Length: 56
Image (cartoon, rainbow, N blue to C red; front, side, top):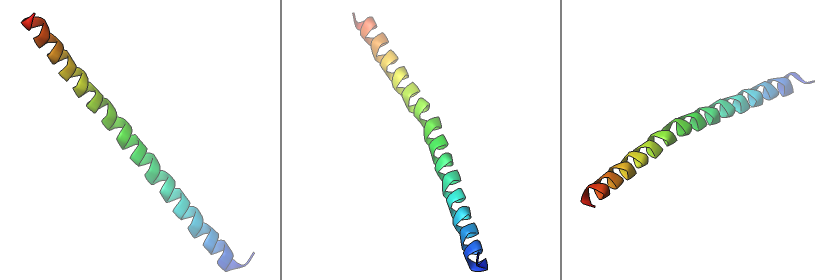
């Protein structure tokens, strides 16, 4: 194998690895944010139900 081809493959592997790690970090951040938004909705719906029960 030509040395430049080997160097090019190493650079391509490094870029692919970086993109993979970046994608995994983005997925983890989004996964951590979803339960917070879902929890807030649950609290809001509970507050609405309790105020409806008080009105009745």
